[in-house]
Amino acid sequence: MNARNIAIAALSAVVIAALLAAPYALKSYGLYILSLWAVTTIGAIGLNLTLGYAGQISLAQGAFVGIGAYCTAILTTKYGYPLPFTYLVAFVSCFSIGWVLGYPALRVEHHYLAFVTLAFTTLVYLIFRNEEWLTGGVSGIGGIPRPVMFGYSLRAPAEFYYFCLANLAAISLAFWGLIRSPWGRAFVAVRENPVRALSLGVDTRRYTLIAFALGAGLGGISGVLLAQLVQFIDPSPFSLTASLNLLLMVVVGGSGYFFGPFVGAIVAVLLPEWLRFSGGLYLICYAILVMVLMAFCPTGLIGLAGRFLKPVSKPAPVPAREQTT
Image (cartoon, rainbow, N blue to C red):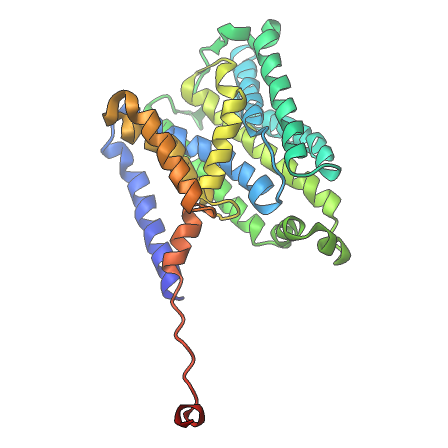
């Protein structure tokens, strides 16, 4: 193991220890912000699969988070279904819709695909807002219960925080295994050069659809946890702004890097809270900081850190015969 891997492992251990110890140092609002970071990171991981590894631009991730949230709200408040069932319904629904939405990616690319997903996000938002018989319209749906696992209630902020953290850990491990598998290498091949990947026998059509579907499914799981975290949902959090915010997390953190969504979610969720000391100027400070990061770190914060951690190669020694000439 080289020095870079040792540094990454040590930093990861420190961060994990800090997250586990957070309930002993933070009050309920601090735990809410950390829970929101964990939930949002799951949605960003899904977008990182679609954008960072498969190279497909999507502005629909916020809509999939909304679909998962509304599935949870409707099934738990109106019909009383347990959490495992809402997980299944939200993931399968978003996976299926993402699979269908992936078909335009087989014909259009780049900004044309972004327009298609933008239209889908607008359509979903209008459904959330106008179909009051199902979604409650602008009044939203309240009283969303937090889960009870094995007879143990997760209503308290600390318990639900650990529950969100456990979901993030499980999804992160599954995502790590996916990108290290032949599927992950196929996604990267489709991103780098679809024609070459097709010539090597990679079914680019199937892997493009899988990337969209899996990314959408993770967005649905993020929505399940978000609905139980805030316990009230309405259409406003699931507009185009939500999709752009998730896109910001992936790009600023580092598109195509495993830890990119984690770092990007820190910038998008935690950084605004840390800048509140500036009063009404914190949004301006936040925007300026993000623009500076995008201008000087096109590969994201993870790419910037990789430059510093990359060992400096020593120049090859000059042969003695050349030194004497």
